Image (cartoon, rainbow over all chains, first blue to last red; front, side, top):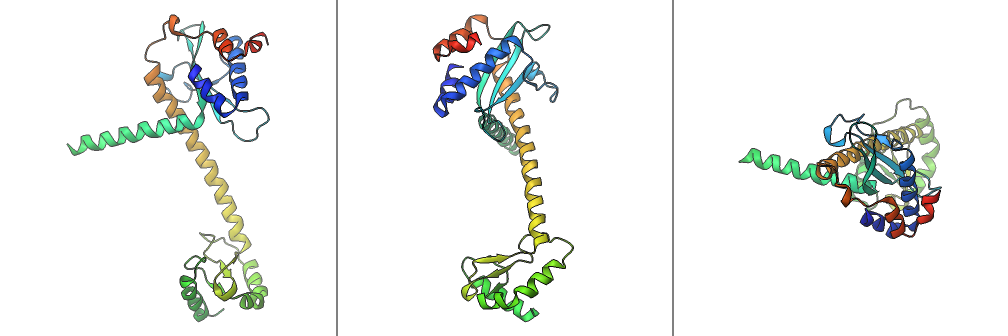
Length: 112
Length: 136
């Protein structure tokens, strides 16, 4: 998490303020973020949520995300576990990279 | 414009630099003389073309381009198509972002983190000199 925030600080120190401010708000309201489970009925993202954020006053779509999970998974969350803070582009790049690798290995498997 | 003119223009155009192949080209003088006719013809169009360049007319010195005259209906249709494509792209990127989260979750959240390995928010805020945010 420290590494994510340091990375964010290299882009703009104010992003760290926004991200930490949101984390503080999550202590009071763990359901603040968007529920991914509702869109994708998949076990790995049960209780995972995302928050969109950006510099205050910046126009356009927020470019950064905080991804977190309320734990324990059942019942009232006792812990908000933040496991990723960073640019949305990184998530997109990650998805692209993994799907490319999966596609390649499926192709190789078909050949053999 | 006659059919022969169009063919001639297209050939000239293909040889020219800076003008897209297939777009008829006019000299500045030709463009000046025919502007009224071109505008009238374009204003009578009722159906947009498939591509912005389908009915475009290039105008420039020695038919080398510089200006592109496009029927208004085609330009407006292109703007709508661009907006639609942008919306579609945004939607797809949203989907891809969520797929990225799912994949990361599979990798990172297989097991709950032992409490000892978590960084408390207070510690994180201290590390970045933002303790004041905790008081808000």
